Image (cartoon, rainbow, N blue to C red; front, side):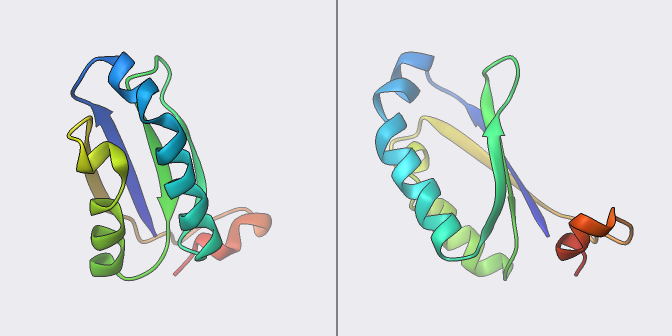
Length: 94
């Protein structure tokens, strides 16, 4: 499993302007089966996405996020080997 942590590096107004195409990209991530959960950071300095798949595929997909394409956010991708989870979250284990 991967944690995709994005941090805004431009003003929030730039992120707001690209929010609709970013959310279209997020939905594509869910439709492909790559994304498991996502949401905004609090305070709103970026967001977090839980993803599964091959690192190279995830990196390539992240490069297509409008936030990344337009330099609005930087991504940190962290791989996590989940070993223990609640029964309803077993799909996170890999």
